[in-house]
Image 1 (spheres, one colour):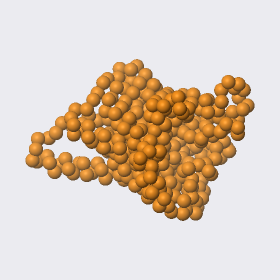
Image 2 (spheres, rainbow, N blue to C red; image 1 turned 90 degrees about the vertical axis):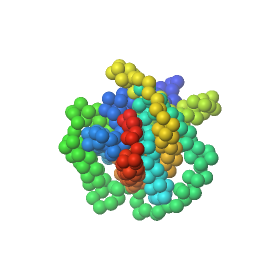
Image 3 (tube, one colour; image 1 turned 135 degrees about the horizontal axis):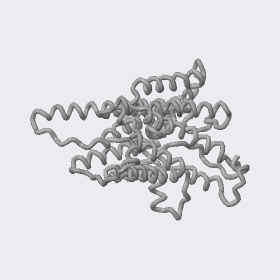
Image 4 (cartoon, rainbow, N blue to C red; image 1 turned 120 degrees about the horizontal axis):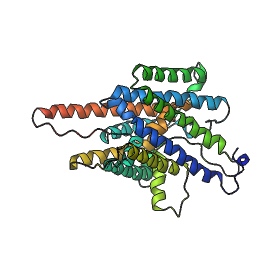
Length: 356
């Protein structure tokens, strides 16, 4: 379709960068307003309301993505999320590590990107180390380990829930209805639900934009939507060696998210510099960054890339990755809570780490 749009000086890959920037601006602004984060929905003090926001976005993303598929605008048959040889060990281990990491760092990488744009130096440190670790896992010193873990596969009759009894309509309905029912039952406010719905709508917009509107037989681009693992890895490499590699959709997405979130934080009077308070806190955050960077690559994405954008495709791999992330987060929070309560009787209560 891109060839019919009439651009003479802009190629599809170049247009994808601007599209990613626009999508990122919208996500950054909306995520700043709604405090969008799955970790908060699992272990935060306001977990029910935060989870309602996340699930409302998932419901809209699922319906929108499946409508796009039904209309023939996008197809995921050859997408990495639909591989028949499921890298089961990488998905489960990666998901567990990512879930543990986001609890240690007090935020998933999408949330930390938004916080970093608002002046949180803890978050900026984490996403930088996250990006370096992800790049090292994809193309650097950790790539042999990734390859070894990824070689443990499980052959599936189908990589999509759509092949199960009931087909795509049933599974789309179950996911969207369940998510919407929880969101409506525990809704924090209609304005937050509206913001969450807008975030969810960005997912099919991303798929359709890269897979249909910008599709060009002579200059193809990857089918992508909201994601933060590979885009952050690409962004850190682009920052260092921009003359050697071109910008892409993911780099535009990261840049747009930072700008959008930063502008909204400033306009709402919420931009403020924050940093680490102790060496122990620093170590905890850095450990979380490494676990998320390595785990996110193994699992095929973060809570946004594999979860919010992956689940709507009805990918079995994305579903397993998200479940593993949830399990890793809950288990890590329980371990940390047990350790804190065990030491409370023998030492003064430590100062709480500021909530993210």
